[in-house]
Image 1 (cartoon, rainbow, N blue to C red):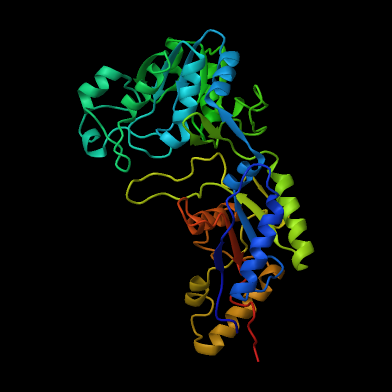
Image 2: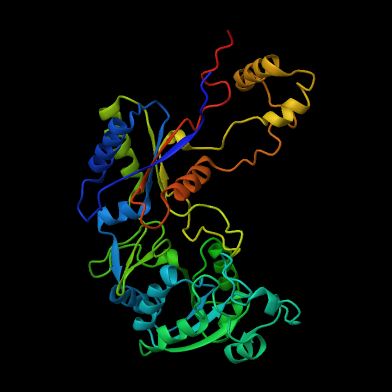
Length: 400
């Protein structure tokens, strides 16, 4: 039998620039890697492409001025309520800067004691025992500092409350900051509201509309079309954007399904194999030290080929070993497991067979794996080749 299972390799790529033929560069890099590492391709291999290089090749950027223009069009009163943004220089600071540049006043409502993805607005040891109820208590900025003092982010050392205030006022925009977990609180100050949360935005929008908001939009509603020559994203707008430089953000890639189909076709032509392709952004995992959920993108994978649809179909080997095959051991146990796996698609799963195999979507699992392999720093591997992912214990096993 074969002695290795799933293998994920980061693939070195040239630095991608706007207008590059991304599909050709990916195929060339994979073929070069296969040559020097003596790899062979197989059907159902997976090529995962980070969203950043797709957007870079597309030139999918927007400037702070273009965001300002969009904000001014969408919120004509000039006073907007921003609800539940995450505290991030990379993810939200440039968006906030653009909104401030385009409007005259911002009422900012921050969730607490953490933001949506787990960044601590209040250090846990300060919050515990404070007597503050985050479900009912709404705090002004002054009351917040009086109660909790200055709270620095554990990784960046930034006080995001002051940072956001200074960012807005530097644009000549007025700001008042509140802390609460009911989005309707912002409607006391303005009826024009932008829900800035990522994964809970639809729930927030429903509450705002029910509460009487005259304009209730989310970040997914801004820059869904070009503004003064900007990039755009038809599905997610400003969601999934990252700081590119002091005056621009990089948006989530456009038409991602077209991209994965093109790369898959190019790989088929070059290798003769039916290779699956996906685009990935953030992985879906939580940092155990900082308690921060990594997924600040709206989805792990905005596009993937058909073979990556669904969830894994697996059985729990250790459960079977302790129940159905408890009286077997050694080669006999191995053969029984292999036979069961090979037959699993032809019989109904029995209760407990998959116990502990959480039915997460394939693309969420694969995107998380690819994100961990490629990293976000200087590895230079924005493409990940994953082989053997769909194999099981039975794959390559010779019963003779």
